[in-house]
Amino acid sequence: MHRRWRTGLRALLILVAGQLVFMPVPAAQDEDLEVLFREGMQALEDYRLRSAREAFQAILNTDPSLHRARLELAMTYYRMLDYQQAETLARQVLEDPQTPTQVRLTITAFLAQVEADRARFARRHAWRASLAFGGMHDSNVNVGPSSEILADNIRLLPGFTRRSDNALFVQPGLSHTYNPGRRIPLGEQVASLLWQSQFSFYDREYHEQDDFNLNVVTLSTGPVLVALKQWRAGLNLTFDRVALGGDVLALFTTLQPHVTWQFERGELTLDAAWSHRRYASEVDSGREGDYGAFGGSLVRHFLDRRLSLQGGLHYLDFDADQSRWSYQGPELMLGASYNAWERGRLFARAVQRSLDYDGVFPPFGEARDERERRFTLGFSHVFAGGPLDRWRMQAEWQRVFNRSDVNLFEYDRSQVSLTFSRGFELGS
Image (tube, rainbow, N blue to C red; front, side, top):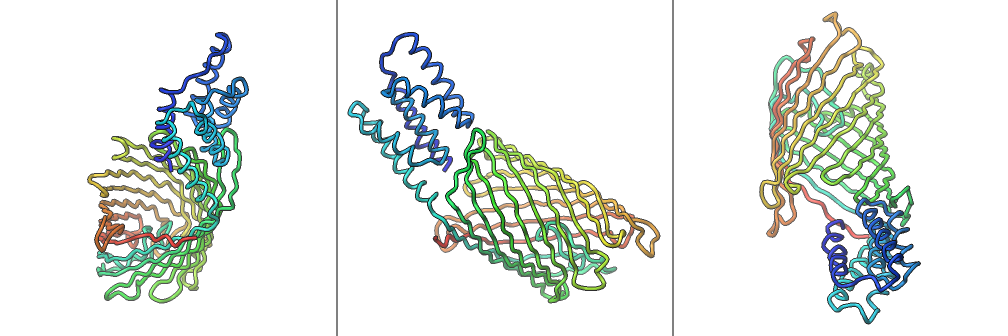
């Protein structure tokens, strides 16, 4: 929709700027209107929509014949999601016999866009299915599930012998968005309220190491507020049921608030997570507890958005029933993505965790201090046409180094995967 604003309504306003002018008014009043118009334009550019609306409305209250201000007011209402007002104002200019033919054509295209967006906004339910599948090679299966599936590692006790294996995986999903049609004024902007829910099932089956077959069922739901091109915020409640080797391993219940501010060439996100972890086996009962994480990430775009750089910092804290499993420490992430060819991109990511454990780990007689480094390289490509039309192919290599004061927990791991994925609109 943002791109349509640039190519549709902004094109209309460029034409208007060249072909429509203020009607003759007394010199002093004309100067006041020009100042007010510039203030309105600056407010609109800065997405201070309430101020822009007040400025353009004040101009029209002084002189209702000033169509340039009326069209800018139409754009303001469009961004405020008030499609009825946007249409009414644009039609007033369209129906004026003095409006140039070329401007009429542009207004007609804009009105078609308004009608299409109004229909989308009126759509109360949106369903979308997704499917991902592929294969992978894991050089150290017995380390256990890793964080490409779950928000935090569930590492098992590493065995004394490294085991490698190949695996196939599949992940179907279903998401639902409920739009109650609510516009919520918040300061200068107007936000739309949505309720988003998602269900997914991940299944990884190893060729030989059946004890490490992984199944994760995830259900999440929660409200989202969206102020287009300004910010978005949400609160998700997520349930994860984890099974390993055919037996239920754990149940996570997680609450995740987040807010993202968008700016000209990037966005800033602050987020947190509070999770209660329950384990099915008595052997793992000491690992039950409450996990927390909070921090933020920054994304900056360069080269007309072909290159994106990302950095993030979070602080992790896990309070387990037994102190030997409790830890705290920072997590630092750096990443980059480059659109190297049409519908294709390269990406890289590095993550480091430095965790200090609280209790002494028997029989070693000392607490663990660990540093995990995880490096990822890959590429993705979206196909156009043919049997793979709109399918995404992603190849990824990940290398993990975990160093610990307790040698039992030291390990290296490599994972190479190839994934095909696609989303499917299911209608309303």
